[in-house]
Amino acid sequence: MTRLLHEVAEAAALLLAGELVGFPTETVYGLGADARNAAAVAGIFAAKGRPHFNPLIAHYASAEAAFADVAADARAQKLAAACWPGPLTLVLPRRAECQVDLLAGAGLDTLAVRVPAHPLAQALLRAVAVPVVAPSANRSGQVSPTTAQHVLAGLSGRIAAVLEGGACAVGVESTVLDLSQPGPPRLLRPGGVPLEALQALLGPILAQPEAAPTLRSPGMLLSHYAPALPVRLGASTVAAEEALLAFGSALPGAGLVWNLSERGDSTEAAARLFAGLRWLDAEGAQLGLTRIAVMPVPEAGLGAAINDRLARAAAPREEAQP
Image 1 (cartoon, rainbow, N blue to C red):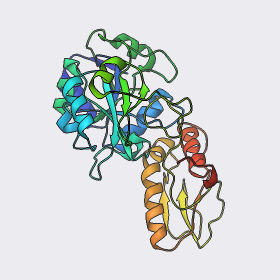
Image 2 (spheres, one colour):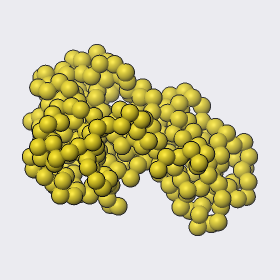
Image 3 (cartoon, helix red, strand yellow):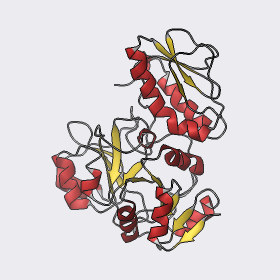
Image 4 (tube, helix red, strand yellow):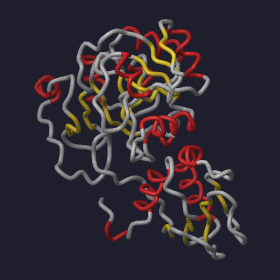
């Protein structure tokens, strides 16, 4: 049963133990997980019934902590000084030493980061001293929660606890701004910081494209990291020149294998998906392999989201967007 907490220390201990905890921000309540813990991150998608592995926003206690995981240019530094803590999310390139799990960033080379202003969110982030990923604490497709009771109404029994923090002051999600590319910044999602305020700081800002080729933040079209090696789905056999992404008992004859879940658990498989694709890609190339064969994953649980990601990874390369 989901507990209603009033102590930050209890909430922090649960997060560090790999549990999911709802917590207040100034925008909406977030569903938090230790961003370094792949299994906990996968648990967010399972609890929400989230149909795709959308990138999640990583929350930090300070800009200094956030910029240890992403590369901040002068624009990001200026926005952080003016708007953080506050309802602004910045999409920036991941650093090589970034501690946030790949699943949290949907396998992309960018990461969405923010420093929330709510005092309880700040206290929680200082207590855990690690990044916390947190989408809105509601079932996917439902109205975002702005009170602890809203969280309990949608997620009771699916998460460990909710930290009571009263009603959210802003009540709409954070503004998301993409600074990962050269040239003018791009608004990916309007939110708690008005566009006019950002323009006053940075000058011209591009509007969100109607059909975004790459998912840089929540709420956009999906087109994730694809390995360099071609991907073959639905494999019932594995050839000598193929690496194998397995689910359950690996196919006989496989040489290079990454097993998503030997016991056939879709949540474990989701937690291991992006790391597995990258590992097979790198190791397979060194061994002279030419393809990654992927065993079928049932649609139940997070299987549908896994298969969505794999289908995009296997899409013909001539259809890929730059």
